[in-house]
Image (cartoon, rainbow over all chains, first blue to last red; front, side, top):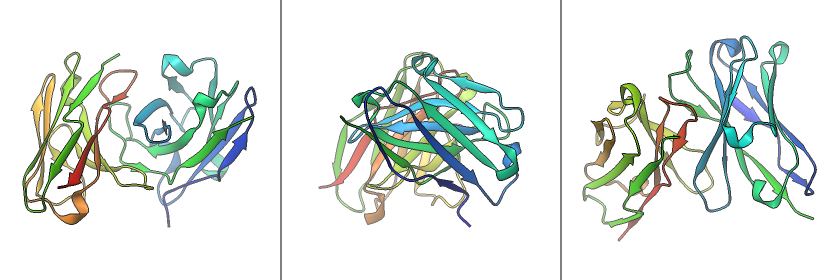
Length: 120
Length: 108
């Protein structure tokens, strides 16, 4: 069982939105934070934020506030990240990652990533 | 925001040699909440170290982490062929969490 399985690649246009899913299995979904991190082609890692699946609380990097929404569906152990008003700079692999049971625990496991391509 | 600066950008070494990677923070990291990840092409990162010096489950003991405050080091004693990859440091003690820009360890 793969602990975190993400949705498939997306190709979308500037100005549009994209919603990526991350399905957890093999552990208590609501007990561990889920982080979202992205990686532009050939670049490093950029932290987007986290969601607490237990209560839906989120914490986003300021850069993404107003453009990113993180939600979860506890009935299917799935978290979602929606990014709006896309530009070509948003082209990246988006990872979900399992964090700890409390905020100040690090990421321990990553999903396989979902490539989002923004192109006109 | 805590900026993490990794050095060197690229490390060219031969198998069996020792690698020393540096991660310097722009301000002190709370409780040494500093992790190291390894990433190979086409793969997600893998956790190596957390709390600056604690190896994650399954990580061989040739990997070691040290440091505190603003200066941290990841050492790999005796590079194995599978260790050639990109390494990122990551601070999770303050929001926003941040990553270093990465150090590539390549075969000389």
